[in-house]
Image (cartoon, protein in one colour):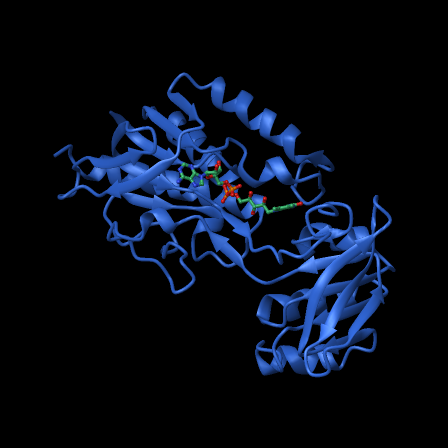
Length: 312
Ligand code: FAD
């Protein structure tokens, strides 16, 4: 058994494992895909201390750092299926894996990340990273002075549109429903911006381009049934970030209504000895540096828990 078992090998899980290993705890990392979302990320320009890197390169650096720690046992391509929490403080939590293995540890750090909900229209996958983007904080500056669309009129879509309107040339916000669902104060702010158009009752049906880059999108006016083309260089899809927590549904772990693991400011969940970090949690900003910071905090909380609770 491990003293600490980290579930997830993205920035959050890796940061956590480095911290617990340096406290001398035998630490396991079980990761479905080491690197997590970094594997799908091209340029990273907002990681302090690193002016520019790319997702796969950062993944390699993280792997080297993990492998240099004798106390860490990295299990890649290892997917957790169920969590059976310890019945008493200091007891062993069990992680049942897809391959039938059962891993045990006194403390768990869950960092299974999230995935962007995709629109599922033609062109979206073809132009991913070629004009189709999901993270305005990450990719907004790449569209400086250009025309972009934001798909989705909830809080994240409207926030993204406001954010982008300050950077890009023009923003078209496209909402499927008959009205935006974002908080009124955000809607008012958005409508006060001169370089923004808002389309409601509009169904995005295709993202078009020349084969290399996005050149536009097609939407259907749901009232008239007519299709329209919009010329633009970028499309930000903002229809939800889905946490990878489905496997925890029956574990007794408290999840928010969005499926995020509810944690306190120290990264503790409602279950003693179970901590969480990064995009799978209720922490509001989903970024690499945030996940890393959270992972370190969860690890220090796990340390605190282990020194206060004798093995049961
Ligand atoms: P993730 O990176 O999602 O890692 C989750 C880990 O858990 C993975 O190893 C996964 O395989 C594993 N896992 C999931 N379920 C299970 C399971 N059941 N059992 C075992 N393992 C499991 N952020 C920035 O700060 N700057 C950027 O420039 C930037 N660009 C981005 C570009 C793209 C295209 C995307 C998608 C995201 C971008 N982000 C960026 C966001 C950033 O990648 C995430 O905030 C960050 O990766 C979150 O780290 P995490 O460790 O919480 O989760």
